[in-house]
Image (cartoon, rainbow, N blue to C red; front, side):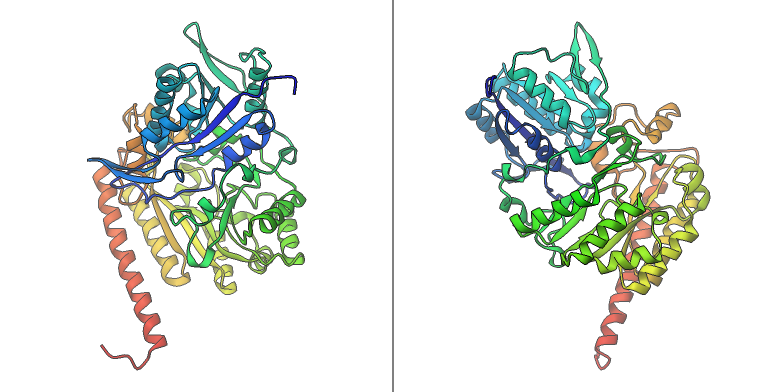
Length: 482
């Protein structure tokens, strides 16, 4: 090449888990692997995933850290001496760890350029550039932005005019937006060869590594969301326009992972995998006619109104182990006018019945605690969740409404002073789970009301679960005595 091959390190930070946080899980760093695929031939590249490298669990008084300890992070950076250190912040809960790595790097290697990227950096780049030692933030889709950044750095060309890159100069934040990719098929497959796949596939903390879905991997086949749910931040990072890989690309990607890494189970992490029904059906047809014999699920959920009876039959035939629906609330007014999801609860019930008939396992997301929602509304949500579980085996996943940065929910809460202005990573970590610490206090409910409802919900859920398991046991062992 006609440029210097500089050293680049891409980092996934450790995770801090607080008392009411979700249990720790790790995951394939899809974002870093996608970036790696673009730049690996232009530099000396090292992927440093702190969730699997020199993994340790360290407890403090208020939280537990999962991942590489600070001293080993410092040693790794010092030994490699990167010219550019890219730090991914997939979740706002990881921001403290990301800033720690930035500071470690600046201390160990002051001349290294530190770049933040990922969903949090895309929304909070101004505060990151103003309050931390980072030099740049990559906003939104990072593949082309970071590729141009590395190319210009290698060739000693200006870095300031790259679209999608934010930076601070003369006390001001500068940012020129980049248009979202129209054709995702332009992107190469994630650079799986840049990591040790066994450290994920054989990892007990990896999402999905349970008996029914072992040897699994996450995959994203589409980006963007045209809907207006007030709690969702995906459109801030990936835009409103729905863009996708072609069915042929998706099927080639699946086969590549099967043939090269022995993967047989896939978590489609798309936010809207079934939005384009024709494309989705072509993917299912390819899996079925190609006799791929894979198992798959949709952990981020799908909209019920993108499904129908015929499509569900293909979903079942193609190896789907379970499907997750975003029901959100048990009150139609809340669904339409408060959450702005605009989906029929009656149609969701129809889809659930269809899944039950097909023996297709269903999970469902529910959320309580939105501004303007009443306690009675929340009780309706809880009743629906328990009823769907009791009648149709729909496993409920209940959350507390959390105002993520940049969302309409966040703006509503700030404008009406329903939350404190400076939320921390700890606040986010402890908030979303059903036994978490609610962040929102409204005119119609207080935080303690949410906690009381949550406790009541879990008590009823565990009672229902015990009854179901007891009855199932008695059905299999009718002569059992106690």
